[in-house]
Image 1 (cartoon, rainbow, N blue to C red):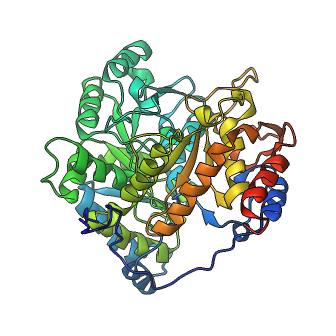
Image 2 (cartoon, rainbow, N blue to C red):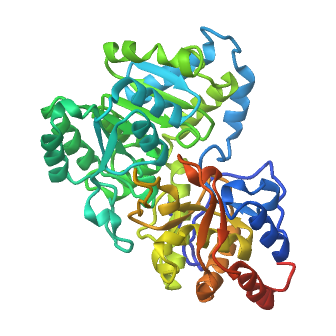
Length: 482
C-alpha cells in the first residue's frame, strides 16, 4: 500500500484490493443498544455480533482473507497424521524465518501454554518488554512471575517516538543479575506491545536485548503475533531499513531468537498458531506437549483448511502493499482524533487506535474501570464495539487488592482489509461527540468477577444511572434511530 499522491484531495489511505464479498451490518437504535449493553453485563465481550455495527474489539481471527487464501482451503489434505497441508506450511515458514522446527497449535495462547508448561517453574521470573494477558496468566498459573521492562517512554501517551515498545536494556541486565540467570527461563519480547497501544519494537533494540540474553545463557522468545505491523514500522521508521525487503527484515529479526511463536489469527490473517524452534533438543523437549494439549504434530488442533489459508497468509504478510494498510488506516484515524484534541496514543500503531481513557474520562477513579466504562459508552453512542485495555484486564493481587494498570486504554482495533474509510470517519465522528459529552460517563463495578482473565466473562454494572443519561443526550442530538 504505497503512499499515493493526490492531485486535489488531501492524502488518504488507498486500499490495494477490491471487495467482492460483503457482509450486511446492523445499526440498532440507541435505546436497543442501551438495553443490549445492560444485558451483556457492561462487558463488550458478551455482546452478540448481530447487535454490533462496527466490530473493533480485536484484530484476532476477524481479518478478511484473500481470494488466494480461500482457494487454498479447497486443496486441504484432511489427514490426522502426516497431512501434506502441514508440510506445505512447514516449508513456507522455514523459507520465511529460517528456523527448522515447526509445531502447530490452535492459536497463540496455546503456544504460551506449551512454553509455560515446559520452561517455567515456581518462583521463576520471565522478563518481557510488556506482558500480554494470556502470556502472563499462563506464567502465573504455574507459579512464575513477570517483570515488565519497557522503557519509560513507552508509557507516555503522547509522543512522536517511533519505537515505544523497546525494552530498557539497562533494566534488563540489572534484572537478570538480580534474579540470577538460572531463575530466568526465558526473556520474551513482543513485537507490537498489545496492551500499551500496539507500539513497535526496533530491530536494534531486539538485537541488543538478545545479545544480553546470550551473554547470560538465557533463551530468547519472540511473540510475533503482531510482527507484520512491526515489520512495516521497522522498514518505514528505522534508520538503514528502508532499502531492505520485508523478507530480509523478517529473517534478520528471526535470526536473533531461539523460539518464535505467534497467533496466526493475527500474523497470517487466518485462525491458528505456530511455535518455531531453532534447536533440535529444545524441540524434542516440547513435542510431546502438542499431542497432549493440541492434537497430532501435523495439525495441532487446527482444521487443515485453516493451515492451507495460513500458509498463503504468511506469504502475503511479506508483501508491503498488504501489510501497510493496517498501519495507514490506524495512522489516519489517530491523526484525525489527535487534531480534534481527543486524548489518543501517538504515534499511531498497526493494531488499532487507542483512546487514553485515563485522560478522556479523568473524573472516573481507576478503581471504577474508566476504560471499561468508556468502551461501553462508545457502544451506546455508536454501535461500535471496542476493547478495554486497562485495570479491568489485569488480575487482582494476592491480597485481593486491585492491580492498577500502567495505562487505561480503549482499543479500536482495525482488522486487516475489513473496514472502509467512510466507516473509519464514522468512528472518528462518534468518538468526537462522546469526548464533548464525556462528563456524562461514570464508572463500573463488578457483579460477577472470575479469578482469572476476568475481562472475558465478568459481569459489571454502572455505579449510577449514567448510561441512561448518556443515551438521552445522544438521542437529543441524533434522534432515536441512530
